[in-house]
Image (cartoon, rainbow, N blue to C red):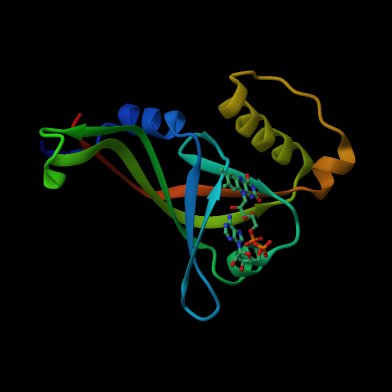
Length: 154
Ligand SMILES: Cc1cc2nc3c(=O)[nH]c(=O)nc-3n(C[C@H](O)[C@H](O)[C@H](O)COP(=O)(O)OP(=O)(O)OC[C@H]3O[C@@H](n4cnc5c(N)ncnc54)[C@H](O)[C@@H]3O)c2cc1C
């Protein structure tokens, strides 16, 4: 089985939308990698994240907004021979998206981001929110600067 590059934007968007979560890769104050799994919303080549105000990641991202985000889906263990370890492989489709985190403070923009996150997990468009929760939540948006797709076994 071969891997293939994915350049078609529709296929790339489908991989992102089919991914259950993403992993955010960032660089901490000691120049060390720090990665975290996150729920997300996606639209218009932009990833939206939400979080509590406190925590290590927000400090890191305010200091260095550069991120590399990975998405993957269609995971499927494949084998040619059950007893031969090297004949096993994992089929997948994945995307790497790079960009800079922007912190969103405008109330209506926060609601739009939350709607995209909710849509990703429920398929539904409209939700109600209470103002204190929206004011309190941290919303981060990452407009894609580069996107790469790759599939193995598909
Ligand atoms: C499937 C999934 C979805 C998630 N979705 C979201 C989301 O949408 N929004 C959100 O804010 N968070 C989400 N989380 C949690 C997220 O991964 C972080 O744990 C959380 O945001 C706290 O990160 P922090 O840097 O603020 O850590 P802090 O609370 O500051 O934690 C301190 C230390 O705990 C350790 N740590 C932090 N997170 C993890 C972790 N996940 N696993 C192991 N050790 C850890 C680190 O060493 C860190 O230095 C999700 C986690 C999972 C598994």
